[in-house]
Length: 341
Ligand code: C2R
Image (cartoon, rainbow, N blue to C red; front, side):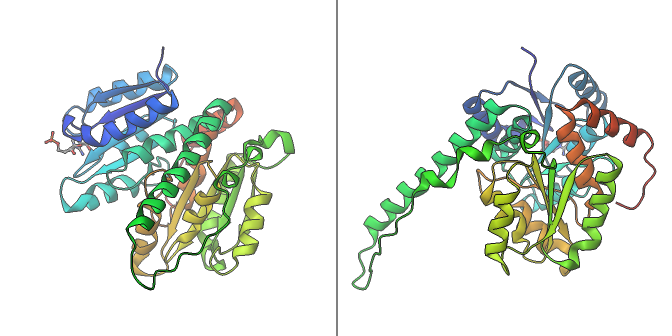
C-alpha cells in the first residue's frame, strides 16, 4: 500500500513529536511512512524522498524539525502537494523552529501548526485528505465528538473536587451531540457553492485578503469573501458559518488577538488556513494566537501578511482531488514571478 501521508523528521530526536502524529493516523486509518532526513545534513535524501513520494501518490507531507527548521520549507520547494510543518522545541521553547517554518516566501507555503503539536499536524493532514475522502471526514467527526465527551468527563471530575461553601452549580441543558451535525458533510458540488470561504476579521485586513483573492482568481478557484468579526458580531458570524458549511475549506485573515481562525475552527472540521496580519507588534500577536491551537483543533497557519501563499496552499489542497486545479497550480508555479506575497 502506497502511503497517503509522508512524515519526515529532521532527526530521530524529534520522534517524541512524530509519535503524536502516528497515533492520530493509526486511529483514523490513514496510511503513512516515516523517514529521517535532514535538509542540512542529507539534502539529496530529502529531495529524493519528496520527488518520488510526490510521483507515487503521497497526498500530504508532514515535516517535523527543531532549531533552524528548514526541512519543511525544503520539502515544499520540491513538491506541489501540501506540506504541514511541526516545529519542535529544542531551544528557545521552539520559537526558532516556528519562525523558520512559518515565514515562507510566496510560492512554497508551509501549513504550520503549534510547537510540538504532532497530533495537530496529523489532524490537519487528515482534514486535507478528507477534502476528497468522505470516509475520513466521517472519522474526523467521530474523533471531534470524542473530544467533547472527554471535556464533559473532565468537567465532571473537576466538579467533584469543588467543595467551597459558596460553590453553586447551575445545570445547563447542552447536548454535545448537537455540536457536530451530519449535514456538515455536505459536498460543495451538491449545492453549487464556491470551493472556499475567505473571511477577514475587519476592513483593515482587506489589503491582505486582496492578495489571497487575486491569486485565487489566477488559480481559477471559486470563493466568496466576507468581513465579519466573531467578537464584534457573533450572531452574524454564526450565520456565516451556517451558510458556508458546504465549502471545502476556509481561509481566515486577521490581526491582533486573531480569534477569527479559532472561531472558524470551532465551527467546522474542514481545513482552516490562517493568515496573521501585521496591525500591531509586527503581526507577532496574531501569528502566535493563530498557530498555538490546543490538541484536536489545528489552524494551518501561514506567515505574517502571506495572503498570496494562502491561495497557493488552497490550490495544493484542492489539487489532490481536482485535476484542473492541479494543472492551474503547476502552470502558476511554473510562471511565478511575484515578489509581492
Ligand atoms: P540532532 O538531535 O540530530 O542533533 O537534531 C532536528 O529536526 C532536531 O530537532 C537536533 C535538531 O536539529 C533539527 N534539524 C533540522 C534540520 N535537520 C535537523 N532543523 C533541517 O534540515 O531543517
